[in-house]
Length: 276
Image 1 (cartoon, rainbow, N blue to C red):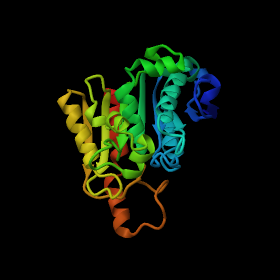
Image 2: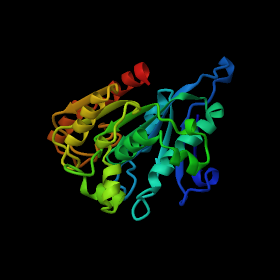
Image 3: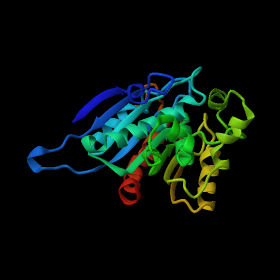
Image 4: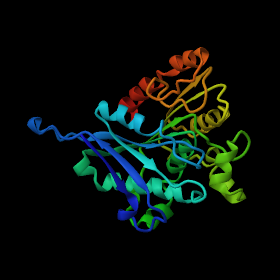
């Protein structure tokens, strides 16, 4: 297997900041002449655009790698540098993956973004706006290089209006009204939005589950294929919801809640294989 880090600014010098992309790819099995093209997931951790969550980064990538998928982790710019930077960095990551598709055995028609919390907002933003010219022009790549083929969202921030996550909203918009409209993804959905898998918990204490519900409503109105799981209980930031990521301080009720919805990853794998 190939595990390494690359600086996206080395390949896309227009980026304002150094941006680390973690690469986790299975190697060819030479004795089997096994040059198969693999489905690929770009993982975007949460953190309110203040920091990048570790529990939503490498643990996800290693799980996917062990199952034979290509996984990448985007360590995007955070406050005070975030605002417009992360979405350009996200598209740079997608362009990098397609540029190196042959050597990494990437299926260029199956590159999905997977985002959690504020990272879910970034993934949803990329899924909403990959059709705009300005991002490919900024990176000096063909427009088809930044196409998003699938979107996977865990307890995402979606809106900048009612029910938003205040810290995320302030960091990504700096309270600019035009950016609030632009980054309220539920207001900007079109039928070009990729097939989407969404999961959250009803009583998420940090990001109101109405963020996900409103997104799913708009996806349905625009006839975008979607699978949605709304679990009854569970704290925010659960990631894989298993012993590799949850803190040892959880009480028994919180542990029971995790065990109830840790099957989200299995549901996602089914969606990935059938639709993405």
